[in-house]
Length: 268
Length: 155
Image 1 (cartoon, rainbow over the protein chains, first blue to last red):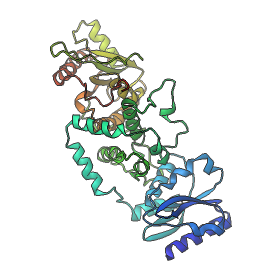
Image 2 (cartoon, each protein chain N blue to C red):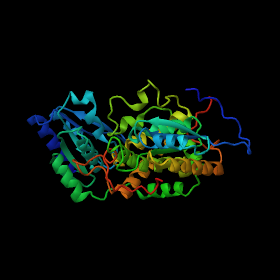
Image 3 (cartoon, rainbow over the protein chains, first blue to last red):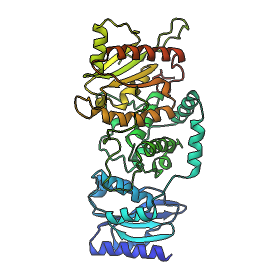
Image 4 (tube, chains in turn red, cyan):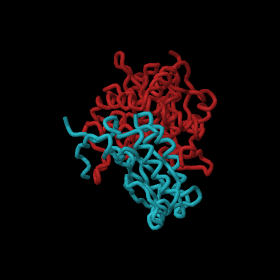
C-alpha cells in the first residue's frame, strides 16, 4: 500500500513540476487492468499496480497521438523496462522518465541509465515461465509434418486483426510489411498461406529485439501461441550469438550486425 | 503471379522435385554459368532466381517460393570474405541461422532448406550441389500436402 502511495506521489510531483506532461500507468477496471493516461496531478490516485498489470505500456511511447501529449513518464515493471532498453538501442527513445515498479518493490523515478543499471543488478535472469519451455520441447519432439499440422491449425484461427502487432513495443514501423501492397508480399486474406507468412514474418521481424514480454500472445483474441515462435528465436539467438534483448541501451541489433566468426555449420 | 493452379497429384515414378534457388549475381550465378559453359550435367529441377547479393534475399522470398509450391529452396552466395559488397553474405548468414530455425519449428523442416557458398570458380561444386540437393529432395518426396505455407484455393 505504501508502495503505490509513493508511486502516486512521485507521479503527481513529476506532473506538477512539469518534468512530465503525461503519466502512462495502469488503472483498475473491476478485475481488469487497463492503461491510464493522466496529465492532471490531482488525478494520480487512479494509478494502481499489481501482478494483474500485464500490458506492455512501452508500446504507447512511439504512438504519434501519445507523443504530442508528452513528454511522458511511464510506469514500468521489469518487462516494460526491457522494452525501453530495446527502443533506446534502436534510437527510438533518446531519454525516458520511468517510475520503476515491481510486484513487491518500488524503485523510484529513474532515467534510461538508471533503468539499465537496475535491470542488470536485480532482473538479469528474467525468463518466461517453465511451462512455455516444456510446451516448446513437446513441439520440437514432433515430426515436421505434425508440427506443420499443429501450426496450420493454430494459424487457421487467425482473423488478421493485428492485435499482436498493436500490442508489441517493437512493432513501431509506421508502415508494416503487411500493408505494403505493390507488390503484395503478404496476403491479407485470413487464409492459410497469408496467415502462415504473417505469423512467421512478424516473429522474424522481432528477432533479436523481442524481450519475451508476452504482450502479443496476451493480446491475441484467438489464443494463438505466439510465444512459442518468439521463444524459439530468442533461444536460437542466445545459443548462437549469446545475446539477450532488453538489457543494454547501446546494444547493436542482432540481425543487422555480424561477426566474421559466426557459426555456419548449416552452410555447405 | 501465376502460381495459383492446384498441384497435380504426383505420379510416383514421374515425380520431379521443384527446387527454387536464390543465388547472388557475383559468385553462385557465375558459378552456375561456369557449370553450363563447361558442359557439366546437372538435373533441370532447379529454378534459379538471380539477385544482386545474398544480403538482398529477404526471408519473405523463401516463404513465397514455398507458397508457390516449391519442394525445397536453396540459397547460395559468395564465400565469407568474397562478398562483392563486402558484408552482404555475413548479414545473410545471421538471418538464415535464425530463420531456418523458425521455419523448422513451423513445419518447413531442415531437409527442405539448403544453404551453400559457391564461388564463380566453383562450377563443379555448383553442379555437384544441384545433383545432391535434387537427389535428397527426390528421396523425401513432394512437399504436398504437408506444406504449411502453400497457397490453396478458397474453400
